[in-house]
Length: 209
Image: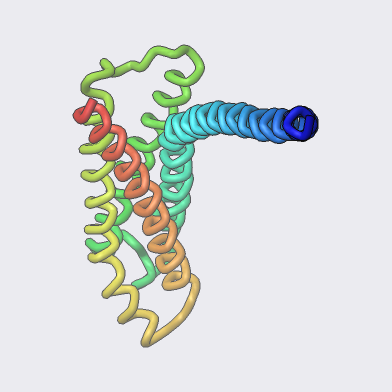
């Protein structure tokens, strides 16, 4: 009789603990499932975010050449106008100095090149077709930007010393105009140097792929 009672008590205790165990395991399993689902959702969101970020980066790199060449054309044009109009008689004539004639010629070249490149990139973005074949377009951009940027730096290197010597003796409209032209030509150089950097990055990706 005592054995039967003990078995009954053990069965009752087991019946009492079983729901609690089931409850614990079900809760644990539910938490695990939710965690896995949340991780999957987070993983999917990370993939989407990376793809969107890549699209934005590609779009920015695609628009950079147009913006940089347009800026270079604007700066070079201002430098060109400042030098060409810098004529005040006597020694204050830009054409009396080879350095300023050289600066004028390179500013005109940089303006013509940058404007042509800006129009080309605008046409490419609007029509989807480049005027230069795709395999050689990036190589052309990379080399041409560097060449024109180098010529601008060469003109700046020639014009800066003589302008500094003049400004130590006198500061007037002539020296102020030449200094402003040099500043604009330098900004055009910076824009083309940045454009060459972007072109080099695109070219390296093209060669890698």
